[in-house]
Length: 414
Ligand code: ADP
Ligand code: MG
Image (spheres, rainbow, N blue to C red):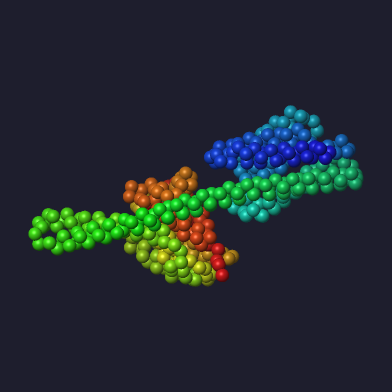
């Protein structure tokens, strides 16, 4: 019995290992298909290698991959597993085929209903969730099984005990591994993003510094030239235009600089009220110009440390993007909502604009990504960099054509 147990453990580890070695670096859609296929194979192997007990009775671990895929993937991804499970079970046939069909159908319908909630849980809650569902599942199974026995002997209880502890033990180990892989992937992504930020901000700091000097000199001489009495009015107009364009260039350069500025200059310990009020008032004329209605609510008592200028710039960038997304739809509503939850400050910015596709969301915050004709693709980079510095987290929820919601969670520091 111990050998089969180990064998089953190996089967369960198989998708995790293969995934780690071969698939970790590929694109997401490809990964999901591979994971479902691997889990199907695992379930098949578990089914064909049941753990045999005395009394001629045996149980297998088919529901462990089944439940895990159902929770992480939902109905769509667990469907192949459901089909394979029942095809195989019908192929073996015998007593209990129909019961197995009923049970798997119930699990197939009910468990994926938790999928949406499940993926929002944190690691510990997810592990508990899998364990509890496995426990309930085995409980039901054992109750069904007890109807086959006339008297519940101690051997029956022994089987029940083994079945439940094996399921729980295996699912805990498996879940810890899966969650660790997910955490590693996320960490790497975060690390890459902060590397990108570093490169861009160092580069931009040095470049914009170098460019600012010639700009100032040129604009100084042009101003002098402008005062000359010997030039024609046409020439004066050209000079004026050049000065305007130089101003614009200078504006862009100072945007770069504000982005690259190190954190330390304007540190405050506060609750965001001043900054959110100020930036909201600043953006209202721009919103009105584009028929955008601004709804603002503030309800936060928690304080934290942050750079005032950077936070303001970050908020303006987010508001501007929201308004620009609605501009193309001829207006809409920008909802700004600051609240507190546990030990975090939540900033929610919601627009009813053009929204983004999944690919666009994934590229958000990468340098120079812009879908606008005059866009710089630096606004969101600055947003991510600022939120990164206060150890916050940005969650983007967007639907093409419907609108976008940014949920920013910032943990408070003492
Ligand atoms: P820019 O605004 O100069 O294009 P950003 O870094 O601010 O650069 O934004 C990058 C891109 O992200 C935008 O071009 C746009 O496609 C997308 N984006 C950002 N915010 C939103 C939003 N609220 N709604 C729709 N698309 C958005
Ligand atoms: Mg922008």
